[in-house]
Length: 227
Image (tube, rainbow, N blue to C red; front, side, top):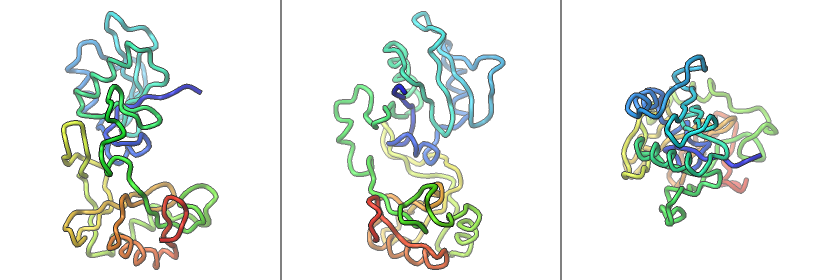
């Protein structure tokens, strides 16, 4: 099985696609770091590539896989893990393990409430998401609904909490509620067959319930309890 480490701008690896490192940033990283390369003859797309470490302390297994907005490696050697930490610093990203701990950070579990968010879901199933749900919420029907909502927009930048602090970064088009009482935009993420909102407060839950009606769906929290 092994244990993966991830260079990511999210606080959990599977949310990296919402807070992505871009392929152009990976290209720039490789161009700036003489001991990194994208091996010739390996697959390369804007959202996928291999990045090999070629430094004196490297061996043939020291490479990263870039996909889903993050750079990852299973069971990296200690020397390569240290190199990954330097790469993460270059990208203003976190180096986290599968359990979300931050490499070499004794305050990893003290990063504030934004780090490990509570979640609520618009879903049609008894659980928030997954293959066992009844008819899933499809991406196209969610997009069609969002397009009819005057208080939503498709945002292409999202606020990420990074080692350097909070700042907006580019992201895939994300349905975003723009009229929250605080005036802070609220992203609604398409999460498999459901819609996820992080740290939803009462006004946000009320807005989620209104959106659930035309979808013939309902709101559940992380424990599959109704909101």
